[in-house]
Length: 130
Image (cartoon, rainbow, N blue to C red; front, side, top):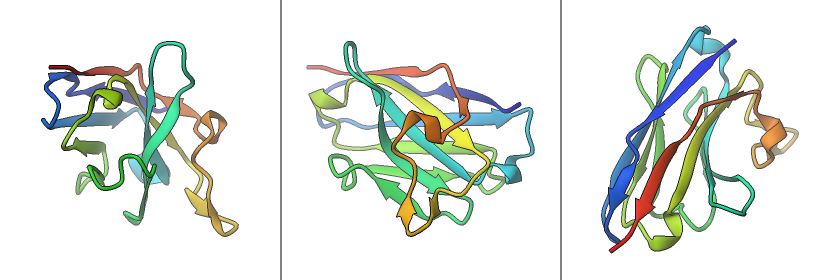
């Protein structure tokens, strides 16, 4: 059973940057082939933002792909989300997610549904406000 713990959230002004971290424990990290970040705002569903697989291929939601960068540590026990040029619409609770299956198979990235991921963190709040 994997344990995921997010950190790095906070309050920032529009145009600012934050770096989120997701620490992985209680599982062989090499067994987690697909990881990602989701965002949820009050009254809305949790939506996928950025994903990375075990060979460091990445996939982004269109609204963040030129501003966010997802990466893994060299030991692959921490996933990061570098968020630049933040906007008011980026406000929300950010969750990291992981699974033991591939992110990309059958010709498609299969990461956008919550059911695509077995392991979840508790979330870290990001607030973008002037």
